[in-house]
Length: 344
Image (cartoon, rainbow, N blue to C red):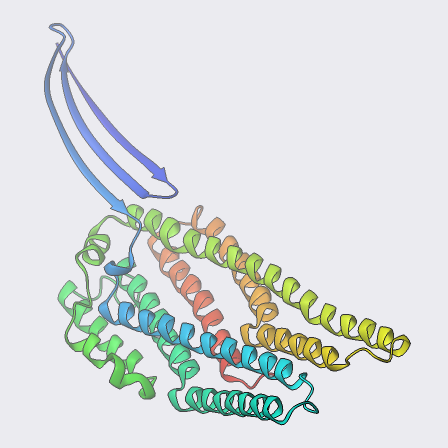
């Protein structure tokens, strides 16, 4: 007597992605013999950077590179101003050689600081950072619409038509940032924009696409924004403490000097400059604004994740993807607007 057992198993892995396994096992109970085992095994790992269009990869790399350069030169500027404050604290009423040496060092520092300022203005590291990040996130969002087969990449288009329209959309996204086109054009024309994994995800069943989207897009972004909100809140508290403790220390030193007139007052200027540098760094990083906006986005994505787990019809999934991508795009638009606006 043959017993045919159909086994369908799906296991969710929070870190590695998810696995879908289907198996048909023929087992002869009478003879206790294993006759046949046919496994169809499809494993989908979490999408890596290389699975996205080359335009996304290059624009993301460009963004990271220019962000690092921008904050490197901001740190150099702040450090130079603190060193200048230290050098100016040296008494210049001593020997002529010492005084001239101090003045020469001060002159070099001032010229260096001016050169750094000009270099940052000319190279526009912050501008390229913002523009390339806007392109990267727009391409990423468009890629998820393509993989999920939602408008404009739904069943109304054949796969070949969907691919052509996707490439067209990448051209449109790139041309929204004309100042950076020259840096990224080669990535659009000379590389693969639709990876094999993007095609595979697009071809799996609706149920599997939904589960993949929930885990690798909604949940992934929800966790990312929540962690970033917490991190920025902690950094904002730390640098706010530093920016307040410095002037308080300067006040205490000033009071001490009132009672001991032979003490050097230059220390007050050094501490005050360091406090101003801490405040400048805090404003350049915009910890408070990012913490608030990231927290709001994480809350919205959490609600959308709950909705996604209970609302899985094809029509509702299309609306879900639209709402998720709009939520993420809204945060990116707000981030770009804040970064391009002048500091308070």
